[in-house]
Length: 162
Length: 162
DNA sequence: ATTTAATGGTTAATATATTAACAAAATGCC
DNA sequence: GGCATTTTGTTAATATATTAACCATTAAAT
Image 1 (tube, rainbow over the protein chains, first blue to last red):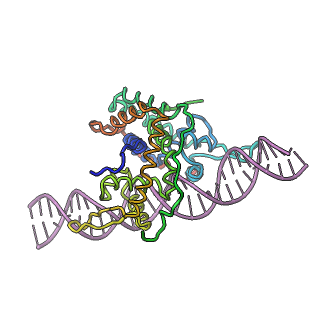
Image 2: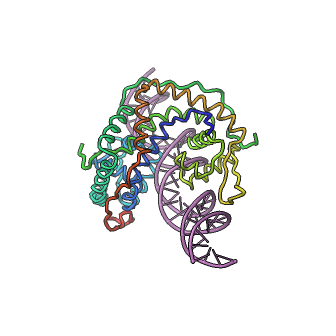
């Protein structure tokens, strides 16, 4: 049990906590032939009627190059449509197809129900505290955070024996 | 702002919170030519001297098939060694190379320092609360959690027009 | 009116995530 | 001893993540 480093690792804990919850939703989403990201996107569009890719990126925490592929596949599945804007030929509008709306109408309530089950299991007050703390982490106004000074670069990843 | 669904989404918040922290470490890790997962693994081995793949999976929150590739690449980079156990030919021991130990010796303190900076920016008490809540989410003893009943499967992902 | 810089998306290359299927070694049982 | 079962890792196929480079369009500056 030699611990050479302090082992506190919040990002890691967030990942585990996320998985602790997600594992109860994954079966539902998968049952409908969707991936987690596809569902996140449908859900986001469902809440806003229509969105532009960069908005989806922000809401769903997906990077732009990644989103391109996801949307493309969802288009192939006839779940969303992408239409270029007239006034600004760079921008794009993403909308749900009727098919996707029917899907969300079936899937959505199951997710909500599963949330209720989890909230009961975890306890409402714990869930409440979590929301509050997450808000503090995410939405808080903080000045810019300093970066430690980095040493000059060496070639650590080189494929030559040490 | 039509919200057809309740929009509470804890897993999503965990993801954002994680990114809120991780973005301050990514530059450091990248500077040394490592990926986030590679660093997680080195750090884990650094704390335990040696680990078996399934232990790494559990500690680092990486699935087995994914780990196979990561370890393989780290082996190519001469950062870790994989040796099969004599007594049980299925199992494997993963260790750091001296090169990796030097890397950790340089990288580790920078991570710790960056943690201190972040802790200051976020406030020690917030960080403390986060650790406590995460423990409640992760380590808590809870009975099995029910799953909502799923409807019969339809072919939502089919590539035929609705 | 040009030139320049910024914006919104995409492509490319590599790394990781996810699910299913698989293979070999160990374990338990008869 | 022989066979079913479990355990540990891996392979395969597909989806997403990450960084860098790129391209077309628009906005800004001269």
